[in-house]
Image (cartoon, rainbow, N blue to C red; front, side, top):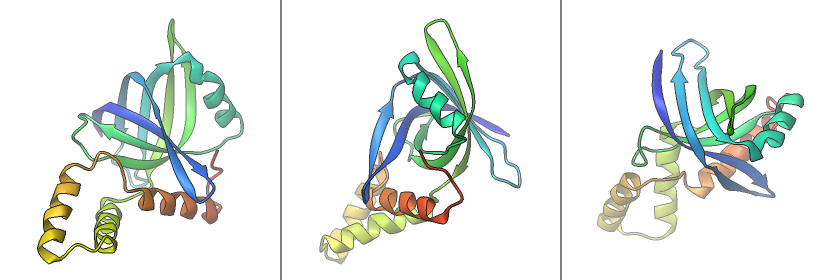
Length: 163
């Protein structure tokens, strides 16, 4: 089991053929890789009480949320995860939300999407390599094409009740 500091949490919500990213400001948080055969992760985020109704509705519907998380530092690459709400704990000024999660988008897919986007933009070989290294170093969010693809794939699979 490995535990990391949760740096950021964004909801990835379907909007027709695209995915909108909605940053949820966190007061504090952890993410735990259980390192088990099911590849389970747990995300605990302390957030504003204004999100209470949203998370309660998802929990009541036994729904799933696609999220993007960054751990430890803003310089780390994001991880897209499919989650479900385990618990919501009211604190004095905030709530603590515990999400059970699985990786939804592997790093190789992200790399492939960045490369496809650059090829489609028409970079030459040397320009392509330089721009690829630059984009990978500064990848603060998944390419929009990757988010759209993973959202559509999860929705069409029927395995999850996306909210």
